[in-house]
Structure formats: structure tokens, C-alpha cells
Length: 330
Ligand code: ADP
Image (cartoon, rainbow, N blue to C red):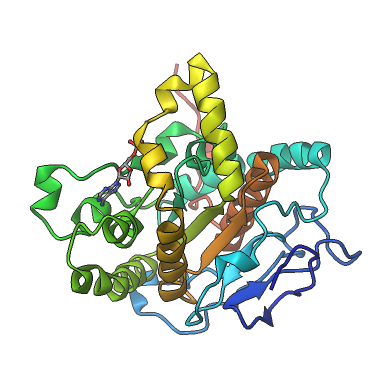
């Protein structure tokens, strides 16, 4: 089933495990940023959570139109999502809209930082050349670096391998007031590890449940978790690899091993589909982003981050009483 023509509507349950988002070509979709006009939807988190969150409940995730949220508990077929989809949007319009979303993110991040009660974790996963670096650079442009920490996860060190698989990820989750970004993540341990057969099958298979428990712990501790899968086509990967080979300034980004990895394209797609299907939860759903077009990818992700921060509704702490009447001595 293709979502090319936006036939699936908000909250509409599909037989492929995806929640179809609003009809991107119809007149009812409004891309203006507004609290009142939430885009797509995963059912709001309904379950109650322990008192750890205090007055703040878990935050409903609001994916922008064009992003496909994976329905919890259903199998996923990535072939049903068109990586070329741009939701009927115009490139110039989206560039202006991206600037607006960035302003919202910057303003809301300042409040999150000042409030110092909760945090936001952005998880990015993609096949090689999928655009993780470019997305992070674009979406977080202008954000106060003090309130944001990016963790990039590479081949584990021997010290990391001496611990349980979640150890190195848990150490980098954002503290109160922070936006944390995972460039690759704990999902590598059911992706590359599975495709390359780095551990016995039973070991990676047992990890989906542990990942769900880990994310549940984070959410119940006040961290909102947004997980983006950047979905590109095999043809687009070829174009990007060729561009890296052709441009001397991009050689540093090119790893000949990427050509070897490309041979495992189908195995990676299957591993991604299983990870998305088994680890999409009401608290932390997987969001599939059509990512062949960078301008569309950047806009819909920025929009989702801004809307989610707005839903968190971070507040500046109350000022000390009488502060406005104070005078500064000479
Ligand atoms: P990136 O591609 O993210 O820009 P690199 O080119 O340095 O960064 O690649 C990082 C490599 O680390 C990738 O090949 C990835 O598969 C690998 N990697 C990440 N996490 C793990 C893990 N848990 N086990 C094995 N390999 C991993």
C-alpha cells in the first residue's frame, strides 16, 4: 500500500502497521504552526504513569503531516512508505516554514532549560547516507548549545562491550532541562549487530523488550522520546554515495565499507522494519520520515520537534517574590 497520494487520514488504522497521516493534498491540512492545529496523530498516551512525573504527564507525540507514525504492536512494511513523498508541499514555502519552526524550537528550548524539570530525546536512525548529520545540523540550528547535547554512537569500544548493551546509551540521555540527540542509538544493537551477526540470534532478539523497558523508564522519568527513521530509497543512496566519490570535499564522508554495507540493503530494511514494529509504543512511537528530499525531511522534523516541545509546555520558573522592586547597589 502506498501513501503517495495521501489517501490515509489522521488516526486511520492501516493494515500495514502504519498510522496514515492527514491527506497532504487536500484542503483540510494546514501547515501553519499553531497550538490549535496539531498535525498527524498517534493516540495520545492514555495510561497513567507513576508519580515520578509529578504534575507533568507524558506528552502526546504530534508528528507533522507527511510523517508516518508506526502503530504500536503492528508489523511494518517500509515498502508502503514512499521515500520521495513531499506531501504536496512547495520547496520554497517549506524553507520559509523551516525558519519559523527553528524560531519556535529556540524559544521553547530556552523555557525547557529554565524550567529544568524535564527533557527531550531525539533519536535518529537511518541507513548509511540517510541524512542524520544534515538533519541534526538543520533542525537544531540556532539552539543554545548549552541546552543541547549530541551523542554519536560508533562501533563500541572494548570498555563499552564489557557492559550490558544499554550502558553506553543510558549514560548519554539528556538530564533535566536538556535536549539530547542520539545520532545512531541503542537500536544499532538490533540493526547492524543483527545484520552482521555480531551476537547470537537469541541475544539480539531479546533486546526489543529491553529497549521498550528502557524507553518506558525514560518517559516515566520525565523524558519525551521522539524517534525518527529517515527513509531513503536504494536509488537515492546510490546518488549520495556517487556524490561523495565525485566531490573531493566530500571524500572525508566516504567510507569504502559503505559499498559493502550496501550489499546488505535488504537485510537492513528488514531489520529496520522489525525494530520499528516491535519498538513502537504509545509512549515512544516510531516516526517514519520520507527523506529523499532533504528540504521536506528537515521541515517535517523541525515541525514535529517544535509541536512536541509546545505540547510539553515548559514554563519559566516563578521569580522570587518582590524581585521587580529590588535595586542594584552602586
Ligand atoms: P556515521 O555513519 O554514523 O556518520 P561512522 O561512519 O563512524 O558514523 O559509522 C559508525 C559505525 O558504527 C557504523 O558503521 C555503525 O553501524 C557502527 N555501529 C554503531 N553502533 C554499533 C554497535 N552497537 N555495534 C556495532 N557497530 C555499531
